[in-house]
Amino acid sequence: MNSDKPYKTYLINLLRSAFNKSGFTLIELIVVIIIIGLLAALVAPRMFGKVEKSKQKAAQAQIELFGAALDSFRLDVGRYPTTSEGLEALRTRPAGLEKWDGPYLKKEIPLDPWDHRYLYTVPGAHGDYDLISYGADGMPGGKGENQDIVSWKGLEQ
Image (cartoon, rainbow, N blue to C red; front, side):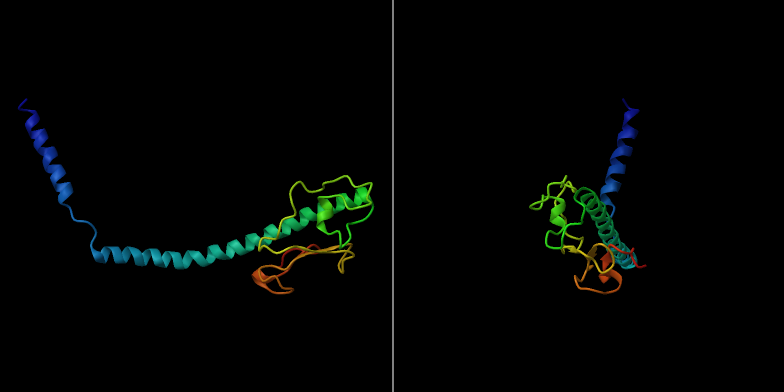
């Protein structure tokens, strides 16, 4: 039993020394906060740039999927939906179309990644139809995050 005494004393002293240790000093905390701030200032702009680019790529992918659905509609019906029928003709049968074999899209027509409607016109100025997302600003034209995403060409770099 006497052999346990040095072990118990050692544990008690170890616990006392752990509880008596002081925490971080104010200077150490300020240095850590400054380092975190510098890292955030360097990393955040790069990450936000990638978010906008991913939204543009998502809009381009949605336009391409609409294009495939529009082509299926044309194969069945013999024409693209009119401008007045719009993209909704891919989901619900327009009046008087017997050869319609849809729905050509499984889900509702989504808004673009910036919560704007896609602009669909037939006949298009650049092909059989034009399908456009006006980008972040929702206005025609623009560069960078405001550039138009269109069905007749890819994204500008």
